[in-house]
Each structure stands twice: as C-alpha cells, then as structure tokens.
Length: 113
Image (tube, rainbow, N blue to C red; front, side, top):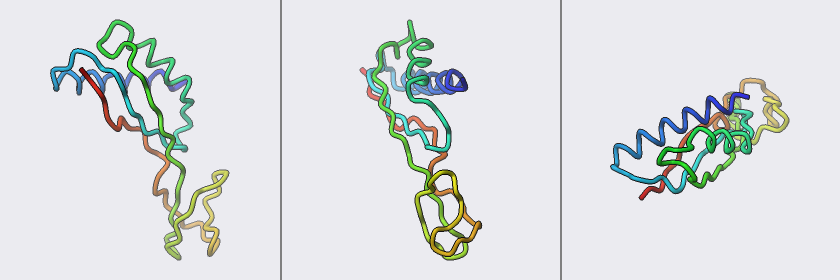
C-alpha cells in the first residue's frame, strides 16, 4: 500500500504551503493523479485522513482528478490515449512512444482559512 507514503508526502506539502501563507485551517485540497501511478483514490483519501488527524489539515475535503494516460508517437507525431498499457501508435504502429500525461502526482491547489 504505497498510498500511505504518498499521503505523507501530500500532507508535508500541504502543511508547508499552509504555514508559508499563515493559514490556520486547510479546508480543500485538489490533487491530480495520473492513471499510470496506480494510486487507489479511496486508500489515498483514507491514509491522508489518518495522517492529518490533529493537524490544520484535519477534515480537509480532498478532490482527486485522475489524469488519463496519453502517449505521443515520435515517428508520426500522433497523440493518443493509451488503452490497456499498449504503447503502440494506433496510427503507424510504432513502439517509439513517449508518455505525455498520466504519471502526474501533484497538489494542484489548496483552499485555506
């Protein structure tokens, strides 16, 4: 369950950012989670709730947006959604594909008091 370590990293970022802005309460956290990270949103939310208990982020609403896995073919420049982790270009069938999105793991923004 790597979600606990990810939740700890998110909490560290949230608390540091809130402190830098003299916040007394974190009310909302928007996260961007790439499809390729294999993060379970429910486990991440649970882990964050456990770890944030007693902090200024305790009870913050967490909103998670799953970012789709998108690849770009280096041979023909076709950009496409990667289905079932098949990194073959659907246009020219090249395996020379780079990941454009889907590996994100980011705190997009916070709402604080």
